[in-house]
Structures are given as structure tokens and as C-alpha cells.
Length: 480
Image (cartoon, rainbow, N blue to C red):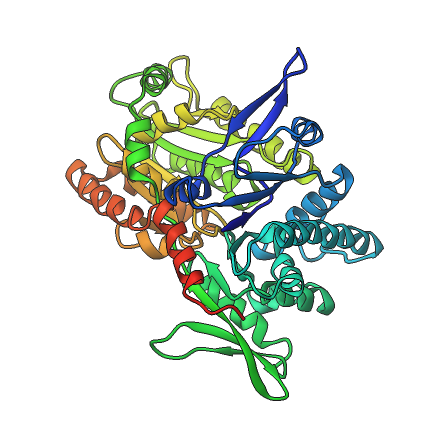
């Protein structure tokens, strides 16, 4: 069994003495691989992302079960930042300001060639490493072309691809040049099985395929049977790519144990001191400063809450974790600056000597995030669009006293948590402000009951089982 992803389970930094220091990663894939055991013969193929990673490859240093590819730094930058994060991410999250962007010019085509090169490096490495009939699980929008390329090289393999992001609806996907759309779909459909986080994203993908070439690909929606895309040749079905839905859940055992570790307890005490006053409530958000996370509108909603409800002055604090993301892209740096400016404006307008309305945290600190989860009275999760959003699932699991969840209808997690969340339109600042007030005003017993049900729904498919379910489904298919 092989896994392929842009980011791997380990990264390296070069110490002052020239030695390499490895750091183990976390996340659902790491949990999944550990679940199948060390004797399964698994291999993780990933990219060298840093100078330390590239140095490790050059020295032949590595972890058992990991192959790191030293793709040239300029090729990786163009594939990762130029295409994956600046085009595909924007397409699937509906982020373009269409009067001005996108612009598919000669520079885009040059970067697309790097995306092709990057995907081909993975396909060739997987083809080289895979045993006869092995299962290969390719991850996410960085590697959409890999399944098709790999099928050409190794038709004996069982190939899966999983999308951790939303998938764009046909009209928005149609912003891409037609040949690029066809290439992306053809790459994805090289897989025997495609996985998505929700039925909504799976349906969007099938709708995009349906609009391309009905003589080549035909979506099938059989009642009570797995969905698929039929590959046609001379008007006959040559093979099928099956579609599956796997809603990644929170790892309850890990979170509950980790959230009571000594460093979390220490940060919990620090946060309580920063909040000030034992009767003050906390609205918590934890995000990367990613355009789709909608942090600015969240701050605007909090400001509206303070304007509409003076009774909350000095009685509530908004703890906003906005971890830096993709700061090598100008639009992300500008967004981070806007988050800072708005925070300063709110604190200047409403703050008093004993009360700071917004506590903005910009340093990535998992223990501090868990501490905030535990003490949150309201969790604000208001993305413009999100494949799943695990924060919405993690907070109810570790909350000490119960937490009201204000949740965007555009988060993938909405479909599992909507019954017990306070649901909002992420663009509607006034509605979000009202939802924050509702969450703050919720009776403790109702909040506790909702949190219990949210936690049960959030942990229905923990990372290890999420991974194993995909692997099992892929292995049950006959290779195409």
C-alpha cells in the first residue's frame, strides 16, 4: 500500500552544527497509517518542502516507510503556489474576484507545465515503488493528475484519490480553460475510486464531468448502489471510476488525552488570566489565516454584537487564533494585515483598562488552541466554503462545560452537525452577530446537551477508521 501527498509525515530542519532534526507530523493520514500496523509494507511518497527536507534527501537520510522527492524548488513553487494554491484552491473555494481574476495567460501556462512536471514526478515514483496489484491512495488537489499518469505507467494498480477540499460547481469550474478542465478530470478519473468529504462535493464533481464530453465519460447515479463515472469507448463501458463519501471525524481519544496534558493546563491558566474575570464568557475561533476561513467577517460580526448589545461589554472576550498561512503569497499577507487592523480597531473602540475585547493569537500553538477549546462558551466556525472543518468537530469533544457552535452552512461539517449548531450564512454579518448573542445567552443545560450530541456526531468516523474504510473499499475493487 502506498500513500502520496504533497506534505509528508516528517519534516527536517538543519541544526547549527549541521545535523538534521526530524519532526513528526500529525493528522488523519498519519493516524490512518499507524492503524494498519508497521508490518503492512506501507510507503508514503511526499515532497521535500524545505531546505532541510532537500538536504535530507541529498544525504540519504529518511524515515522508514517514507520516500521524499527532491523536486526542484522552482518547479515545486510554481506547482504549489502558482497552480494548486492560487488557482485550484481559489476555484474550489469560489474565491476569485471575477471582474479582475482569474487571468489565464502565458504565465499561467508556464506554471501549469510545472504542475504537470510535479505530478509526473509522483506518478513515476509510485510506479517504481509499487508492488504488483498494490493499492495507491493519492491525496488532494496538489496531485489531481497523478492517477491518470500512474494508470498509464502501471495499469495493474488499484488507484484511489481523495479530495480534502470542496469541489467547485460546474459554472465556477468552467472558469478554467476547457483543455485544463479536461486534463484535471482525466487525471482524476485515472483512479479506480474517488473519495470526497461530503455528498455535496461528490455531486459537484460528477456534475462537472457531465458537462465535458458525454461520449467519453458518463456519470451514473444508480439508486442504492455506488455512484460512478462510466468510461465509454465505442459507446460501450470500458471501465468505471467509483465515487465514495467519507466524512472525516475527530480523534476523540487523542483529543481528550492531549487536552489535559500539563502544557495545556498551563496555557488554560494563562488564557483565563488574559480574559480576566471569572464571569466573562469566551467566543473562540481557531483557524489558519486562510481566505476561505472568513476571519474578517467573524470580527465584523463580533463588533456588531458589541454595538447591538452593550450588556456584553466587559462580559465577553473574543479569542481569535489566526495562524499564518501561505505568507509567501501577497493576497494572504494583505488578508493577515486586515485581520490585525480590524482587531486593533475593535480593541481601540470598545476596550477599557480592564478589558481587551479581542485577544488575537498569531503564533501556531496547538496546546493553547486546545486550552481555548476547553473554556469556549461559543465556538465560531464561519468559513465561506470548507471541505469539512475539523475545528467544528474538535471543540465539542474537549469542551469542559459545553459550548454553543455557530457554524457556517458552507462548511462540510454542516451536514453532520446542523441539528445542534446555530447555523449562519457566512456572508451575513448581522445574522452571525445574532447567532453569537444566541450562543452566549444559551442556558447551560441546553448547551451541555447540544455539545454531547455534537461530540457524538463529530467522532462517528475517526481518522484511523476513515482511512481504513477507503483502503478497504479500494482493495475490494478489481483493478481496471
